[in-house]
Image (tube, rainbow, N blue to C red; front, side):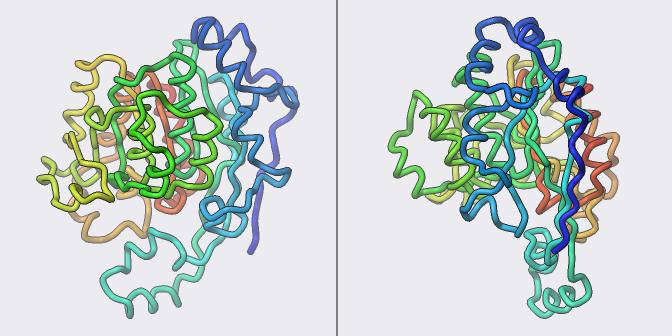
Length: 352
């Protein structure tokens, strides 16, 4: 397998990425001091202690979640000012067996013969993974976390809670192609609860890396007391084409977080404005119907009238209303060129 890794930016760019004074002016002294307390200055950048402490020198750890694909890693989290985002937003590409990816399986789920036949004609699928996770702080005090697989956003949410930037009653808008409301029953038994006081950051970091699958972060954050299940609003790709479907019975099973508030994307920005301080929890596969050639054909046909201007406009409006923005690039479901990923992130960060 070939792995192409972009080189890191020059050290002088890294050294100008963040200063304590910038952080205090943007977030206020208490929150800034907390974030600095949880970080260490390494090679000119502030690196989060909990993620870097679980990562070896090669950026990998030996566990099931981080090594779904050979060469996949869980990097450190770097704190950065908005102006330093572009030089730090770097990716490495893994050319993986197409049939190992979730998107590929979803596309050809209807027939095993179709699945195997397509596998022979499409042996590799390039997936782009971040060299570093970024915690971007804008001058207006908004905090934006950028990672690859979605479970890592639970840690950023915990970090914002621990720093005093949000409380447990915060409303969260989950903007995604998928509900992501599966429950990790083993982890819930380990946690006990549900909890009103979140567990330590180090515990949450370890869960994000070692325990959670890609569709389990919402139930985990609710069980930890980071957000109340009733305050999670589901904004899904399929609802871009019209009103949401009625709640399905499967969401009431014990391995699913009850789907509380599913709203149409067009209604979401207005509701966020009414609620006040909110979190935007975005998976970039929300846009997969526009760009990803393996997006299921029958789903795409229902969304063909919804342009990028419309769907991206909704997300940008939500970003403007949000205090905290969590962005997952979701490589397994959103395998598009790096420049398209960067363009979407730049547009959303600029609107926030």
